[in-house]
Image 1: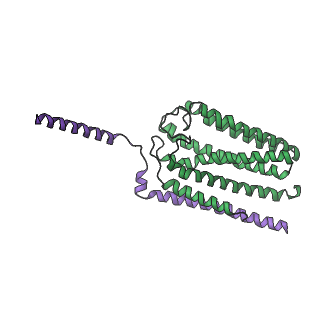
Image 2 (image 1 turned 90 degrees about the horizontal axis):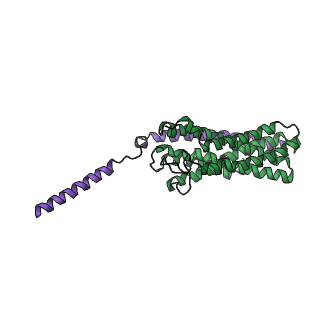
Image 3 (image 1 turned 120 degrees about the horizontal axis):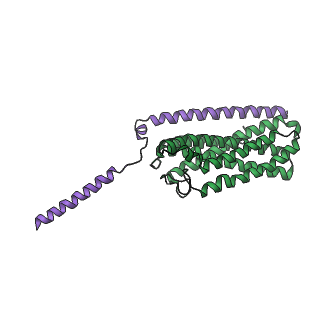
Amino acid sequence: MHKSWWKIASVILLVYTIVGGFLMDVPRLFILNESIRNLYFHVSMWFAMMILFGVSLVYSIKYLSKQQYKHDIYASAYAGTGTFLGLLGYATGAVWANYTWVTDQGQSLSNILKEPKLLGAGIAILIYCAYFVLRGSFTDMDKKARVTAVYNIFAFVMLFPTIWIIPRLVGSLHPGAPGSDSGNPALNFNDIDSRLRMVFYPAVIGWTLLAVWITTLKIRTRLLADKSLL
Amino acid sequence: MKKVFATILLLTLNLLLISFSATAQTEQPEMADAMRSNGKIYVVVVICLIILFGLIGYVFRIDRKLTKLEKQQKD
């Protein structure tokens, strides 16, 4: 184990997330009820995903400026873990929406399919999936690293309209959208209750650190395997 | 005169009572309070902690194996 203090911090924060997340007091809200605790898990996945995509972007830019193969490995590993977290966020959101939108509010399928947040997040994840398709389609290593580094910058830039801008502009069932009248607390930082923040922020840090830990394992494996190329 | 006062007092008291009971009846969002009071929530916490520790233990082992491999390669 090298540089292990942040790995220990990750474990401590995640234990706190589960213990505090299930046992501490949360605001009593209609529709969401006890499921507001999903905030510590579902929303944290998305936050960790964005942070990892950001790290991936930094390494792609580094690759383009210094042309070091190891930066390409870093960028692809971070993008991979980020995409995985995005899929987890999507899956957990699907289950949550099933109980709060379909069962409790009786929303029709066509309403849910029109959800800007679901569409935007889906497009964003597909763009990152295309990054891996692109990586797989090259035989020349240098070309692969260069072209995919540029594509990775494009993919990150596409996060702006798909998950940060458009879902904030149009009405949606999802908390945090203008016109969401379901009595939910938005994922609008002015609205989140201080009781929720006490667990939410540590949860985001804990999940992100765990994701980084897993990514460093992937990177170290690749560095070992490609030793001859470095 | 006293009678009028008494009736007014009674009426206002009545009204107050009615309004109190009305507020008491406004619906509160339903929470899993039963789970909290009978302690079953601790079972959920323990199970989630076991899964978390299992996963972290697994990651930890991969980490250690990788460190070993890295050392071997250096030698």
